[in-house]
Length: 227
Image (cartoon, rainbow, N blue to C red; front, side, top):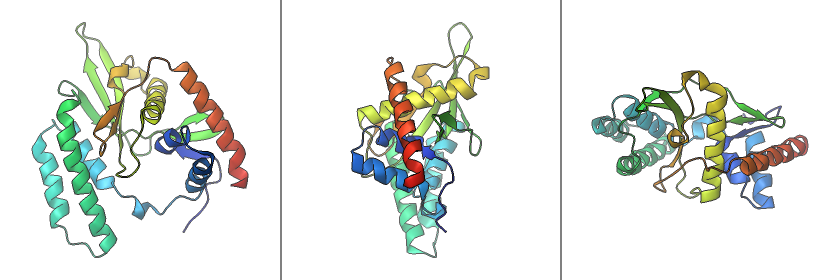
């Protein structure tokens, strides 16, 4: 059942698109967040889990193959589920080809817990929800920390601005919630657009982007009751 959210919420991916969208698309994005689709229609949870499993268990490519094989050999009762499995197989393959270019060989990844805390900005809860915490040790033996967010869309790839906005929010999330693990290393903060084969990291000029986010959240909060 389509139940509107009582208070303003937005996913970090949708907020990244909102910040670069036309007025008509902004209105539609708010409506989609207020009236979210049924969770069963989410298209890429199995691909997200497969890639997370791969990165958290030693980056053995055989793990990706195992997930692909399981999806390919499962008999689904509904056509939508079979189509979703095929999309996930494709997404896993796209990531497999992208992975060597990401430079993650010396990084230790661990899975983020279910529904991590949101960022609260201007009365809007931003669901950042990175899939993984990334950690490494520098040459002085100091732990560095970041996060990875996987982005899946065959038809709406991130552009440079959207990718950087999302990465900026990921860095803010890491600073707010993971600082006990060590200083945040912006190089470990990754937004990976799987189908586009690109990654984005936080830009150095964060202040202006955070101001843009503040204004966007104020706009979302103001439009929410009447959307």
